[in-house]
Length: 297
Image (cartoon, rainbow, N blue to C red; front, side):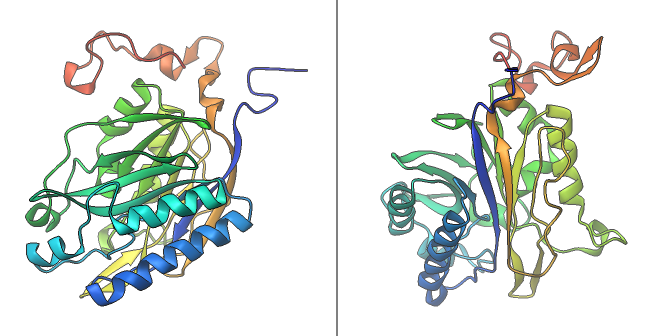
């Protein structure tokens, strides 16, 4: 019998790619080559949506603004984005990846969304972590992009600590959130089971917003810093599909998702549903509820 979620409205296989890009101009070409090979490998496993980490083509730990400028590229015409556009067309896939963006003399920590039709859009990270504040300017908007597979919102790394980001994306109708990350290792953010706080935050964000999240983190060490892996893909209920990735190993996680399943309201009881129970009439206007009602789910 047909129902709002059967058959699936937008069934795809998603991939969260966890690998170890390294900073330095001498490494940039090999970083990009690695992303292209990982995209091809994921496509061979049936992935239609592939999410790569934050600053996937450059590595993360820039020492100076001059070094960051040397790595940064204009969008969408820079060489890395052009290579990803060509890969998306060749493999008929959607790609989300982090990149250092140069816009004149201003730099942004940016995530791009690319599809078979080419460049779709970008999100400039709004919450900058630690020395990022010395290199990048913060973004000032939370776009949601319409695609043939559904409405996609983007966030980057430290954003997951701020519940407003995902809430604003969902209020604008996002069916899925892609999270490109460089979660850094710190003892305070790893529990006795070896799981990281960012994974739990991703699960809780997914759960309270009834939206799947594809979160790709990096691994490895770079200039004294260590990254903690733990990539994951959540379902609309917030639970990870296929577990959480190792904290140290290169890994590609796969999950079969119905991207638009969140449009069929997830009812918690006969009288409760998250989206309907929200008291948007009382919430601070800065949370994004001014100017009209949230998009229909």
